[in-house]
Length: 295
Ligand code: FE
Ligand code: FE
Ligand code: ZN
Image 1: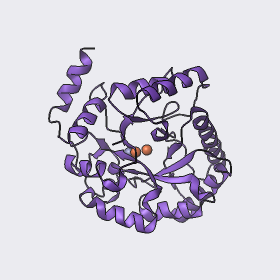
Image 2: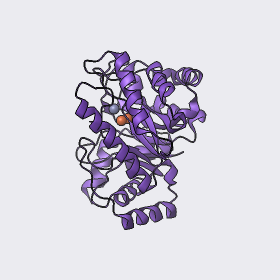
Image 3: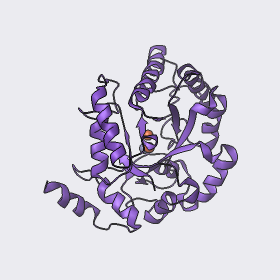
Image 4: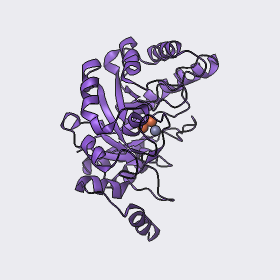
């Protein structure tokens, strides 16, 4: 099982991320190259990157399973403000370069929000932008995330994701990241996850799935909301999430937790433990609190 969570990047960059992932008992992780909400990015310190790579290899983290997430404010779907659209394209290009420098293979991207465009125009805009970003010598793969369909979000069903994949020129440089909370909120029942996978396999091909975000959801099926819950503490439920995580067809795909902090503390060490034991942790909040408040 390849499992981890999102982690901070912080002042030590990738090295800090690796240290944090190891403290959670994870064998992979996902990071943002800065704050997820903005696009200010620090210069990369290569000596710290080397140290990060060493720490990964001595602790059994395969860098090929490590995921970067692009900031939320990139919106490739909206051309109404041409400057913002061009900015998104340029930022994403730089993000791919940064990942190449860090040795990271995958960047997860929210496809974008249509705002006042029709869905058709928005999908077209996304394809245009991706075809500017991705070139013949691009070395990092962009993973389109399946979205909850909040507001005018694109990528809320297999057809929208497929449309983008079909219209990107360099098809071997684009893949998909499934998110269980987003799937639930978009109307896909995780009770019958295998049916979804079969459908996905028929329309797109399961080989395109390179990452899965494992989150419970605070909202009912089809709510189009997108609020993550801790594993087993939402409407999807522990057993359904275990079925996703241990699904044979997704065995080699990295699983990343993006569940909420409990108070000021990250729950990941304990969520990963309960996933490994396949046993729901009724006392998650108390255990997290006990552990971190005494450090
Ligand atoms: Fe995301
Ligand atoms: Fe996600
Ligand atoms: Zn989400």
